[in-house]
Length: 102
Image (cartoon, rainbow, N blue to C red; front, top):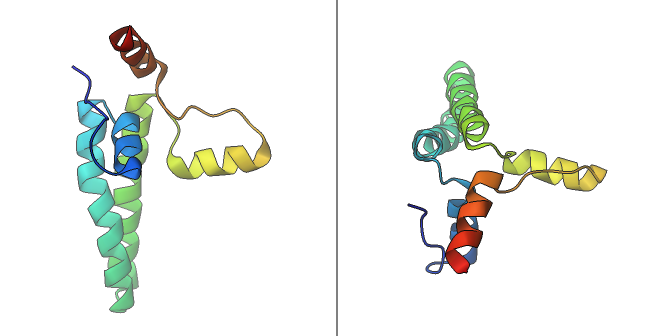
């Protein structure tokens, strides 16, 4: 059952819309904090640990987007700047939402 997107700030609604697959969502719940902690660890001077945390956290999010079937936000920005097509929301979720609104 799709998550309703009619509550909360716009950025959160858009993020939830792009991360509907439960495995992708779980990977992001783990991966995002890892990348944030990596910045803090880097500021403490622990480059090796920061690199491991960042690469692992970012990798988990990449796997999540492969499972989800859409592009990562960073890639969307680059593709937009280059005028290339991108997938913001997986087509499988777009169909579900369209059917619900009718």
